Amino acid sequence: MQYLVAGILKPGSEERLIALRNEFNEHLSQQPEKVSLFGLLRDKEGRRTGYLAFINADSFREAEVFLEQSPFFQDDLYERVEVAEFLPEVGELAE
Image (cartoon, rainbow, N blue to C red; front, side):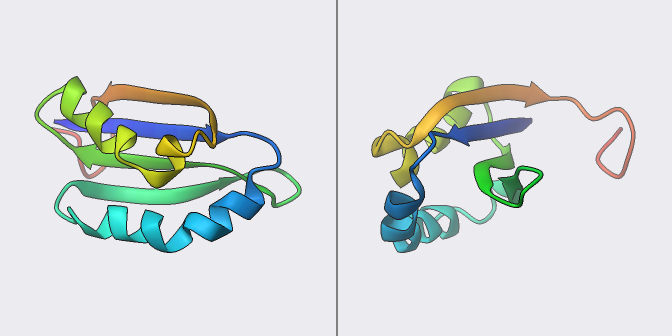
């Protein structure tokens, strides 16, 4: 199943993001078969506001664990997070 995993960053977290960049990239590369799509969220001014991923997981809990293992999550850089099952209705992934 596909899950959306999103984290909206706390204001002022840029310095910590940079310090944890290598750990975060390592987290993403540890299970490449899980990540279908991953990207950065930016506001109108181009500032980084969060991250969003679509991942393959067998359950909500597995998707939550993927998020919880993120260095950004563990360092409390997210203002809020969201995990939701994703059921595509239009596009290449739709059945």
